[in-house]
Amino acid sequence: MMSRSATLLIVLAALLASALSSCVRCIDIRLFNNSGDRITVVGINPTDERRTWEIDNGDSAIVWYQYRWEILKGAATWAYGPGKVSYPGPKYASGGYFGCLHLAAQLGPAGEIWMLAADAQGVVKAPPPQPVGYPVIPDNASGSVAR
Image (tube, rainbow, N blue to C red; front, side, top):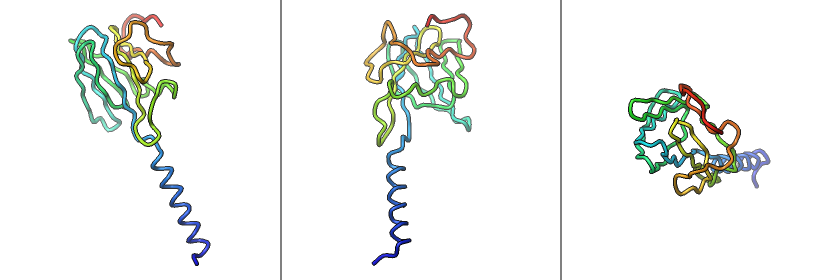
């Protein structure tokens, strides 16, 4: 017969293992490029490590959620500071129980980032109603974007 403390330890270990296995470990974003030109997406983590993705106009790529972003389009560089591209809430996500959360977004011609339904299949002419904070406008944008 096991002691009460051994039983408690086993139960706590099982609960911890269950909690850790159900946590979302990553967020990926299918980013559709509607900027009018080929772009380079640079994701930057808090230790300044960089990951890049090339996306042709009208195409998409799955990018990882990052601490901050830069998007290069021709001679322009759009910067999105820490936390600027934020989690939009479960209405815009799929998956996630035992793996990555999946989001979809679209980059517009002025560098604005619009959230799309997680199951979006391509560039949309009229983005859906946006969550608070969207569309995201680059930190260094000039002009305004109709919301």
